[in-house]
Length: 238
Length: 88
Image 1: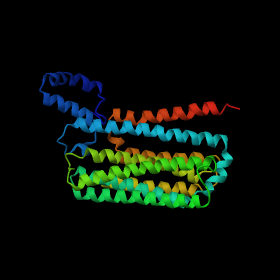
Image 2: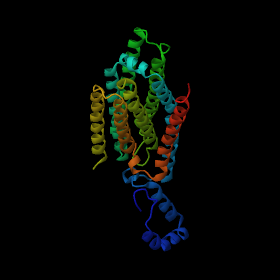
Image 3: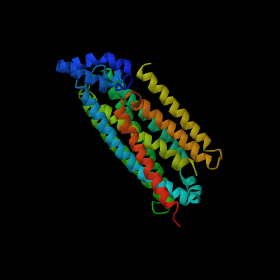
Image 4: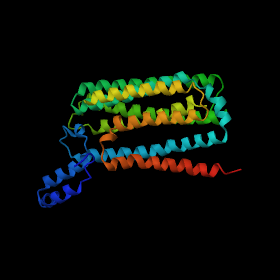
């Protein structure tokens, strides 16, 4: 049926016709199975142990991607402001960006990339039913998120001590808005991950059911994604 | 390839690209710095989206949900630029 499960060659179509008809005339289980195969795509690993309705996972995924779409536009508005400021006043960027601590920025980038890895490993583990590894990975992710926030705190302290406040100039206004909004998202992600950890500790997740962890993982990867763009745009290019 | 191995390899690639973007930022390429930084950031973002977020294995509907917002992002950025660039 192909990777995405929706495309079929003409040859398949003509030979498929009688069986498609029979699927319609067949039992409800057959119809559900056909529908499920269409929905699955090629992510067999994700669906390996699932007992549940496969539509539930697809629906949850679409839901979180929908939310991430709104987040893209949320940060997108600030990135638009960044673009306009850069085009209108490049000199400000040339001089101000040097005031940012790029070592802290780089450390934060590495920390978030590692946290993305740990949450992905955790999800891969629970897909195989490994509950303990999921718990360990969730704890590691939360610790790394806390490290990120700690470094941000150190950075902000440095800036405020030097008098570089949100009201100082447009660059710092943008810097505080972007990194501040991102830090709030990291906080929210930490809360979600902690809830997942509590549920995982109670043994609520298994190879058959772990949708919430998958969804939280997707959100966390998005938080990492935003930082991957923020780091060079604010810290590295002048 | 097991999932764990894929993730570790992608993780190493992300770290290498981070070092790369850090290093290139010290070379003065003028406007090229912006382009290269955005390019490397986009490659990293694609790696995260394709492998960590499993987009590689998803069907067209999920791809649509993931890509259409980027089109809207391009719209808002270029739309706003088209206004402010031509103001006095």
